[in-house]
Image (cartoon, rainbow, N blue to C red; front, side, top):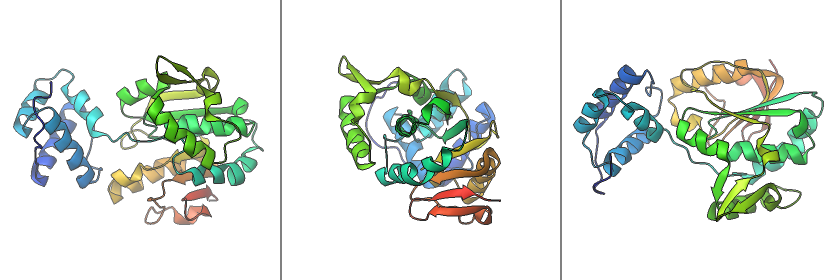
Amino acid sequence: MAARGINMVALDYPELETLIVRIKDISGFDFSGYTRPSLMRQAETYLSKNAMSLQELLIHLDQGGSAAYDLIQDLTVNYSEMFRDPEFFALLQSEVCSYLQSYAELRIWVAGCAAGQEAFSLSILMTEADLMDRTIIYATDLNQKVLKSAREGVFSRTAIRSFSENYIKAGGKTSLSDYYNVSYGKVIMNPEIRKNIVFSIHDLTGDGVFNEFQLICCRNVMIYFTLEQRRKVFKILYDSLGMLGFLCLGKRETLRYSGFEDHFRIVSFHLNIYQKIL
């Protein structure tokens, strides 16, 4: 499907619900737990860039092939950057890493890892805290396209400039350039930073617990879910977290109304970092 125009296609909410049902019928993937405004924007952008009406898209989906897969990849939001919210990483370094020193083995889960920016940031953080040699980072996403990019660890030189600024603000101990090489105008993360990261597919809306973790970062993911879906995801995160492990949410997210508020102590109210106590 090649883009043939740039005119924006507008959907109404009943049409969006029709699309959600059709995607589930064809692929089994359920978007019903996603907030409608965000999903509406993604769907309209997809239709517009491919110059399709909703009816054309539904016919295309019914024809099978990779259509549903391609659509799902585009409807999932995959924006991130390295050391996003530098104060978050600074607080991890000062408050959380000292506690993690007591573990002989550490498992970290980055849920909704996009192209790996958060996973690479945590790998650098753990390296500078002398913890990476005992740490495995599981970085998951449901989008196979961005996971492929994450495994390659390649970023543009434009992006790396803002990443470097974030790293310095986060209290980095050296230069971010120590952790990557430049080749043919692209930035490639060093093998030492990538070797203890496992990238794999995991759908927070449908898959369950797959390990026990001492630190879970699920930042800027919950904002795309309905309240009901968030409660289901919080149950997965809670069950995946070892006792006294840390749960990190985005600045616009919270444990409130999750049903698990009493099971955590607040490490940082502003940055939404919590420690499991029950």
